[in-house]
Image (cartoon, rainbow, N blue to C red):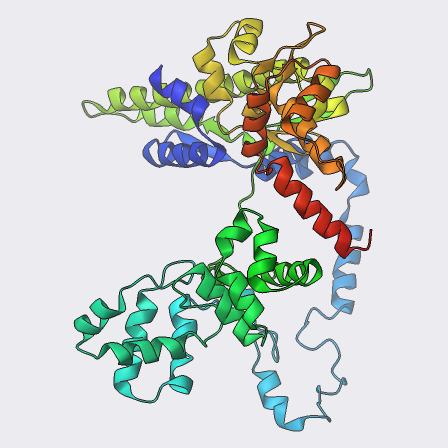
Length: 487
């Protein structure tokens, strides 16, 4: 029972790994892919040649037709070594010296099989890419040793947080030599590598672009004011007007805050939805299970019966019986898991039909208890089912847990979900003008007019959670942008 509950909670990847482990340990289990199942169904539907021939008269397939087939095959050349014997050999008149190299490429010449991986460029690691630049920048062996040690001290973002004094003592070198080597390393590609702070990272990149003027240096030295959107103080410190400050901010946005991440392999994690929701012709919604997320595990009962007849030693029958029971349990548990996921997904769709038709503004408040009571399950089971399970809709891919949200009271008695209220706050902020920036109290008044009973502190909490600044910095930023656009 515990293992069955764990199966419900597993993700698609975890479930695939668990099934692979079970198949490895149980000789009575096998997995069948969707392609193999389709091929098997097609093969079962197609008549066997012998059976198909029995439907016709024997006179239709006689020796005359066989002799005609022999004569036809004799008239055709089965040798495909050279289909066009008179065709000229490929020549490269524009570069004859590259002909031998061209013929030695994979797949060229005699038609040997080639590996597509031969054409894939090797992705260098951070250490390899930086070490290749050392011979062009540092000549002394001691400097290269220091540089190699500093390369090994970089973090994943490309920053160097090692203490140079401790590094010099560890290597038995002078501190000024370590600093000199670090200054050289900071000129390596990508720009910004080997920085010790974000400000230094930005300064290195701007210096490489020849954009590190005194005003930009002052801006970089006061990044905390930029984080607070204190544009008035930045204009005074940098000695620029609003238009120049906006240009400087646009330059800052183009910089890479983590230059070391360019060496990391970029893997695209594909999420396989467990169910797909489609609009039905009758105006309702159909919920279908995704066959790609349902592993087809089969019990080899014929093999189990054959082995059972040959069991002679003590314990063989007991082992076979235990393996068969385990295989039957796994298949039954997988079916139960699929049915439970489908039942929970169907109830979620039933509760959130308005959201599917009109968007997040119509998302209803929903809790685990509401779904559990509707389908006669425990809340713990519903919680396990909704963990790391995904639903494909016409809007986008949603996790099951996305649809569960707290409720906020309203004047008309119809509760609103917290997600829909946050979405409405975001829309209000995006639509406000530079001269009509809404305060938290103004947002509360507008929401109350729309029937949402919400406190000011709740609006402030939602606004901060969405990383929206308060009305004062928003007003300054919008005015600066409006002036830059000439509005």
